[in-house]
Structures are given as C-alpha cells and as structure tokens.
Length: 399
Ligand SMILES: Cc1cc2nc3c(=O)[nH]c(=O)nc-3n(C[C@H](O)[C@H](O)[C@H](O)COP(=O)(O)OP(=O)(O)OC[C@H]3O[C@@H](n4cnc5c(N)ncnc54)[C@H](O)[C@@H]3O)c2cc1C
Image 1 (cartoon, rainbow, N blue to C red):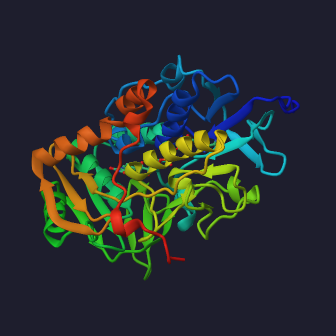
Image 2 (cartoon, helix red, strand yellow; image 1 turned 180 degrees about the horizontal axis):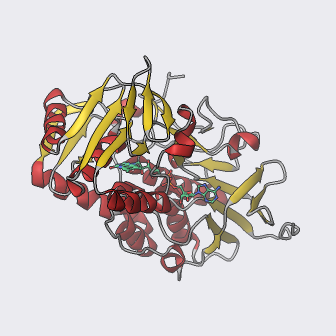
Image 3 (cartoon, rainbow, N blue to C red; image 1 turned 30 degrees about the vertical axis):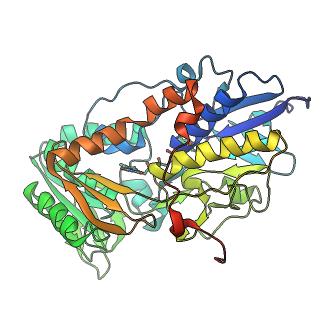
C-alpha cells in the first residue's frame, strides 16, 4: 500500500462515484474552479465508461447504447479521473483507499456511490438471479435471453424497474413467457387511470402479472413464494429494492437504517461536515420526508453539493438544498410509456401522458444527462435549475 499523497495548501475535493449524481458534482465543480490554482478535483469511479442506469433494461435486451467516456467528458475541465474501486474510507484521516492499494487524501469528500439491487433480501438471489446492477450484469442477461429460445423469465419486484424490465423483455422476446412477481400491483403509486393504462400495456405485451406475491427464495430454475408455492423460471431477474455500499457505515459516518449517509440541509454528513453525500447513497430530508433515489433528484443534489463547496471555499455559508419531484416516466417497451406528473412530494397529479408521446418524452429524459453535462462544462449555471418544491420542501419545524 502506498503512502497518502502529501498535504499541501491545495484544497483537494475527492468525488467518489461517477453516476448521475457524482458526475453532476464533478462537472459542476470543475467548471466553477477551473481558473483556481488552490483547488484540485478528483473523480473516482469503478469504470471509465459512464453507466446509463436509466437504460439498463434496454441493455438487458441487447440494445447497444452509445459509448460515453468519463475521462473524455472531463477533458479540459482540469479535473482528474481515477479509475478504480473504492475499498475503504477513513473519515478521521480523511483518506480513501482505492483497489486496496492506492490512498487518496481529501479535504472535502463527495460521497456518490449510488445503490445496488438488494439481492440480500431473499436467499439465493445473489447466486441464482440476474440483476441490473451495472452494464456488465445487464449485458450478461441479454446474452442469456438471446440464447434461451423459449421458457419462462421471472422478474421479481413490481416497482418501476421491474415493470420497465418485464415490458422490455416481453416486447423484445415474444417467444418468452414473462411473469412479473411483486407484493404491489404494478403502477400502484400512480393516478388510478395511469396505473390502469400501465397494467393494460403489460397485458397487451403478454406479461403475466402476479401482485401480492412475495418472493422469499430464489433457487436454480425456480422462485419460491411466501406460502410455499414454487414458480418455475429458466431465468430470474431480481429488481426487488435497493441497498447501498457498506463503506459509509464502516467509515463511522452517521447512516440511516438503510446505510445511507444522513445529511444536513446543505447535503453535508451530520457527523462529518467535510463530507457531502448525494444521489441514492444519501438520506436527504425535505419537508415531505426523506427523498427516495432517482436520477431527477440525484443530479440536482450533485450540482448543489458542488455549488456549496465553492461557497464554503469562499468563506460563505452553503444554502439549504430543496427539491420537488415533478414526474415519473415509465417505459413500456420501445413504443409505449406512461409519464405520471407528480406533486413535489412525488404523489401523483391527475395529469399523465401515455402512448408514443409518453415514449418520446421518456426517451428524451433518459438521453438528457450526458448532453446536460456537456452544457454544464461550458455554462455551469445551466445545470442549476430544478423545481424547489415550494411549501412541500420547507423543513422548518420538521424533524
Ligand atoms: C432500469 C432502471 C431504470 C430507472 N429509471 C429511472 C427513471 O426513469 N427516472 C429516474 O429518476 N430514476 C430512474 N432510475 C433510478 C436511477 O437510475 C438512480 O436513482 C440513479 O442512478 C442514482 O444516481 P447515483 O449517481 O446516486 O448512483 P449511480 O447512478 O448508481 O452511480 C454510482 C456510481 O458509483 C460507482 N461505484 C459504486 N461503488 C463504487 C466503488 N466502491 N468504487 C468505485 N465506484 C463505485 C458505480 O459504478 C456508479 O458509476 C432507474 C434505475 C434503473 C436500474
């Protein structure tokens, strides 16, 4: 193991994770400190290629997505890219270990390691189920589906990732029998009419929906439901819930019951204020409750952390983060979708889009982060617009 890089007058900002949130933080910050000699920005990520998590269900059915190189995007910003897996954070020494061998020091840390499918939720899921944890996992599922030729695919989890995946697989592979298993009815959180549209679309794609089904075990060739029933499946895709990296808890940062870093209103760790936490890895409280992880909220958290870091470097107080949700776009194959417009607390409005218009909307949203980063590189302020949520996000008086 090499020694930590030497301490100098330069302020080191280390960003861990180049997903939607970490990438937003890195570009926003690099663009804002480009001309400063006293700040150094380093972004660490497991892969050089940006993972378009929003489109992993497309990757899982063999769609080829554009190559997006993180080092190429950072070129010209002055930010440094380190490819490697973060294996430990020492919050007291303010160092991060990468691939167990390199040690990077920081003055300010942005923790943006995202989340993973929770394969610990059911025995056997880790060993016998595919996931959409990353591009490689999705590609390996695509290969398996292409070779199957027939049989049953069980998609476990009737949340939005499960719905999008089941629809995508059923459309791309009409020779396969797709069964969607989950506790809740798909689209349950939507306006009743939007939810009904979603379920009708799944029926049209011949996805067999089994709501009220709790998968308790994944076996080779089957899943077991609470109550003992076994559902035969040649392939199992696990989308039930998310878990986060244990690194933050191991570092002694205050985390919530799901391991997410608990932040103050400026997105700093409540136990270690030199650490900002953003995206799915953070537990961020708004007036309506703790935010749940999405790309629409993750990107603003990254931008806000970057702006706050610059304010703090200039001796100014960071501003509170406020965010209100505005939509839930759900693809139903390549030609259909439902876009549920929401109140800032993510509850459904009466307004929603369906059909080809919704599919185009969803595709535009999914394709937008990369060009947004490109724009932010030149005009950082262009990334600083999002709905603040009005009365829904005021935390005054809320514990
Ligand atoms: C199929 C699918 C569809 C979705 N659709 C939508 C949608 O329509 N709208 C929406 O808002 N949200 C959607 N989401 C959710 C959205 O993708 C996540 O909320 C978002 O990716 C969170 O961003 P993030 O930056 O926090 O984390 P991530 O995007 O998960 O990025 C984390 C990054 O950290 C890296 N990393 C993790 N651990 C380490 C480590 N130890 N060392 C080094 N690097 C590491 C990862 O490789 C990754 O690059 C969808 C998710 C899925 C799976």
